[in-house]
Image 1 (cartoon, helix red, strand yellow):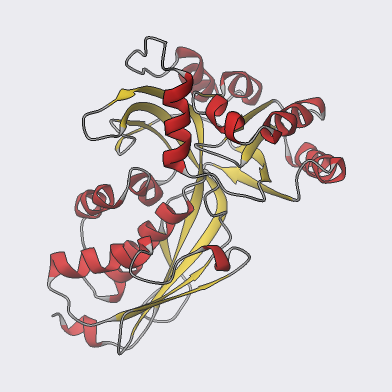
Image 2 (cartoon, one colour; image 1 turned 30 degrees about the vertical axis):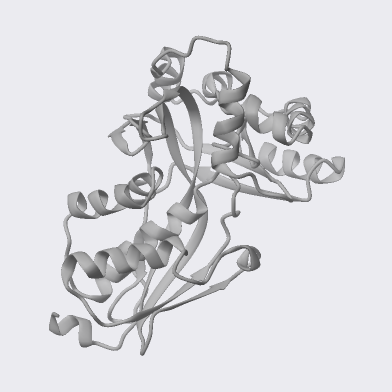
Length: 314
């Protein structure tokens, strides 16, 4: 164990949510996952993951979604910390505190974000200085979306979504997110997708030219038209109300709308801050959703905001 691991000072990492701008779902693989071609964008809704040395391993969760997050060893952030400890020979317990603002089971990779935040925070707490490649390898063991939560920005994902390539896009995009009252299980959505496509020939997924062109140009209107999610019909099948939410958002001026990942969060792209405010008010007043949040993207991935000195990072 390094001497840095004995320093009784906490570290906080901040980590963003994601939206899938495009999600193409291919056939099921032998390991049970599906071949994917997806474009992720990290957006400015955040969880803060704090770690500090403790007498025993533990997790505390605060924030509006706290009661929906496990605090035992099944918590993905705890699994991340134990994985990092096991790989590096660290045997000093830590307590994790997650201040949660990313929806749970909302298709925005909230659990994956917490795992990425825990890796970054504990790496700093223990003074490990792990390379990006090492952390990404550990992240891929934890889940398909964890590597992207580390990197942030805008990226193309392949395989099961864990093999990443940066997308050299332009622009800053304004999003309005309509949150669902009840979450959707990712495995259940994929199973429904398989059921709906049972009689169809499913091809290997490839990114669309329209999505790449829109991101290269930085044209928000073109990006709105290019948004696509092949899990969306399955999510709507399981929660039919999502269809009405999508229609309402477009009716009130969104450039495009999409179910984020496996849902049920619906993401609307808007032209600017003013139109985002207008849409948020309209969605709330419509009664189709109970919680609406606004954010911009792309933003950086998991990063330390309060370091070993106790000072906030810039």
